[in-house]
Structures are given as C-alpha cells and as structure tokens.
Amino acid sequence: MRNVLIAVSGPSGVGKGTLVKTLVKKRDDVVESVSCTTREPRSGEVNGREYFFLSKAEFEAKIAENEFLEYDQHFENYYGTPKTFVEETLKEKSVVLEIDVVGALNAKKVFPQCVLVFIEPPSKEELRRRLSGRNSETEEQIANRLSRLEYELSQSEKYDYRVVNDDFDEAMKSLEEILDYEKSK
Ligand code: ADP
Ligand code: 5GP
Image (cartoon, rainbow, N blue to C red; front, side, top):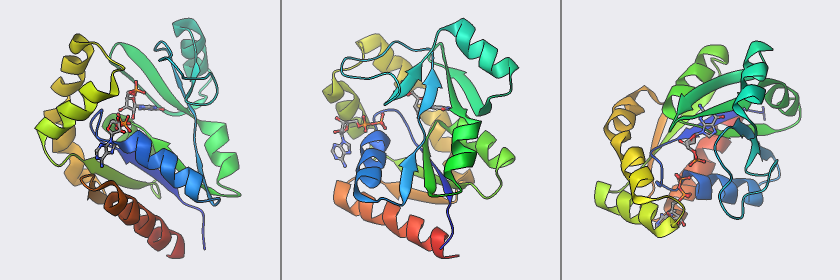
C-alpha cells in the first residue's frame, strides 16, 4: 500500500469539511493538512487545528519564501497549503487536502500523482440550505460563495472522481473506496 495525496474540493457548503473530518477520525492512515489563511477565525475554530490564521503580511512573506505547495486568493482572503508538512507527512501516511478548485488543479501541476475528488451537491437548493443552516456566514457572504458555484461545477470534469454528497454515509463510503483503490495501485 502506498501513501497518496488526495485533494477534496467542491462548492462551499457541500459538506466536504464534514466528510474529510469524518475520514481522518475514522482512519489512522490518513492525515488532513492544515492550511494557512488570512480570513478571520469562525467561532469555535482554533489556530493550528482548522487553519493557521495569519495576517496578510505573514502570508505574503511565506509566498516569498516559496513555502506553499499551492495558494489561492478568494473571498478576499488568501488560502494556502504548507509544502513541507505535506512532503514530510507523505513519508508516513496519506494526506488529504480540503481545497478549492483552483488550488486542487494547481496542486496536481506540482504533484501530478495528486488524486482529485470533487464533491457535488444533490441540488443547488440543498446547497443553499446547508450553507444557511451552518449559520457561519452572513447573507452577503453566502451570496458571494454561491456566485462561484457555476464556475466550480464547470471544473468538476477535470477531476479524477466525482462524488455526490446526498446521503452522507454513501458519500463517505465512496470516499473511502477511492482512497483504498488509490493506495492499492
Ligand atoms: P463545506 O466544508 O463543503 O463548506 P460543511 O462540511 O461545513 O461544508 O457542511 C455544510 C453543512 O452541511 C453542515 O452543517 C453539515 O453538517 C451539513 N451536511 C454535510 N453533509 C451533509 C449531507 N450529506 N446531508 C445533509 N447535510 C449535510
Ligand atoms: P472556508 O473559508 O469556508 O474555510 O474555505 C473557503 C474555501 O477555501 C473552501 O473552498 C476551501 O476548500 C478553500 N481552501 C481551504 N484551504 C485551502 C488551501 O490551502 N488552498 C486553497 N487553494 N484553498 C483552500
């Protein structure tokens, strides 16, 4: 069994965070990479657990030092994957990245063996319901996130796998099957 790098993407609110958290809790052969961001922490988020929360200047210094495997700027903030953490962890375990479509396609350029998994919503209405239900964004932020939806869905055909997150347990099962298959290659 080899260790693999998997990038999980999909529209905001589709459930990728919940899927990835459940996967790493269930499996001790997979670790989630903690990204850096300049966005404000949401209530309950802890520095170093959900993200490393950095100032814009700190983030830009890391860009200058080439410390990111990939980074992107959206929703007016930077988000990036720490390169050394991913490279070191892959020596021991598989690594899962929860990153947006631009980031995932960039990660594949740097790491061609990176497996791309796109999580699709069952419908736009259900996506909106999940985003609103999360109670973590304002209406304006939700509209901003939904405005990226068409673009994100149009990129899904570039992915190695697509999983519809309708029934959560079914989606989890598919994600694990993808991981096991890729590890066995
Ligand atoms: P993302 O990380 O893609 O932005 P989250 O993981 O935060 O999305 O999920 C958004 C909301 O949808 C959360 O409240 C989560 O509990 C809920 N959710 C996730 N998967 C499902 C599912 N299969 N069915 C219903 N609700 C779900
Ligand atoms: P949120 O603000 O909801 O935590 O994340 C917003 C978006 O940023 C999501 O689509 C998430 O997948 C993406 N994201 C999180 N970390 C990274 C990263 O390291 N790189 C890139 N490119 N996107 C990321």
